Length: 491
Image 1: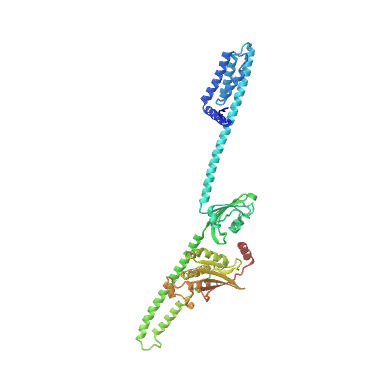
Image 2: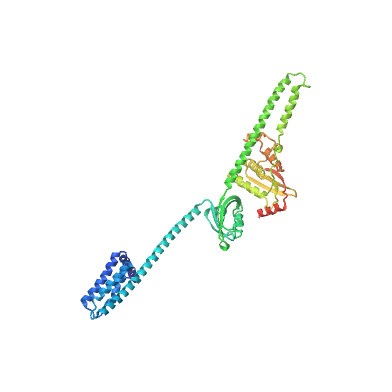
């Protein structure tokens, strides 16, 4: 037996719903449908003359019209349908007819107002739903924009929980701290100790929004200077820290290079001034020598005495020493951090020549007594000299290591260059070889003078290969207050 294909029930249901939506989309269509229902009922009662009343069916047009009419029009529609229904009721007294009319009006009106309330509630719900959908769309759009902004930001953006674990990190943070590894769930204390200290503040100190300069550490152990903007919000388990962090190694490097260039320029000015004075004295000596050439006796001669004084003046200028300058303010310096700051300045230069820089200073090395900027300039000058020395070497390596006894610390700066041909001339001013390489010949001379200004000594240490300079510094003697403050800063 051939079975005809039937429409699936779900498809019929969807088709019916679409037809009802099309009908409800127009107020005139709905009212037309209600009027058609009334006309059909009147026609049936007029033509067929039923023995029973179709009054209950008149509620149908009232309910249909109630979906688009206001309340007062629903009441009028109910009265109209109740009156129409009464036209086809016979064998009733006037009182019965009036009571049926009133009861029908009340029933139709009640049904109509119920439908009106249901439709109105539905419209309100749909309106709220549409507004919620619109707000969700705007929220998703804003979240997407913020996500793209965070992911495309060149600055590292981190969100950290109250117990110090990284909850979220953008791509820049991943590349800055642990390229190729995930930061999520990692402890922030090993990355930025400042953030861990800030999270340990009591909950009473809330709403922290600040900017700070600090040191951060990558997963491979290398440290770098950073500037951070962060805020703390929430309390207890909901406590969070949001931070924006920027690596300022380039800025520090440029600043220190600029300072170094200023020092070199000052050396050149000093060299030029001293050379000018020497030239003046030499010119005077030449004049005196010509006068002496025409003289037959030198004893008691005024020109001879003047020559003696000129020679003494030239000797004084040639032994000019920066020790006459005022002594610098001394402080307790941690050599490990000082060398890490030096790494920030010179690391890029050594990478450009395929060289390496190694620091072999323990984290718990004792503090030394020095002037911070002066010590950094001495190390920077030695590193720059080593950089020029190893450019043509097979192995390009700079090593800084330290040792100490009960009173002094010794900092050795070693490279794999060709070494020094005449070490006895290293710390003399106006070296010819240095001037031929474009320098002033005062670099090591001034470096030793700077070291002496804060009580240190700079010497050349003979080695079988390469070059080594030893900087001897006094160990710092701290008071109890300074020692506790130092322990806090190191922790």
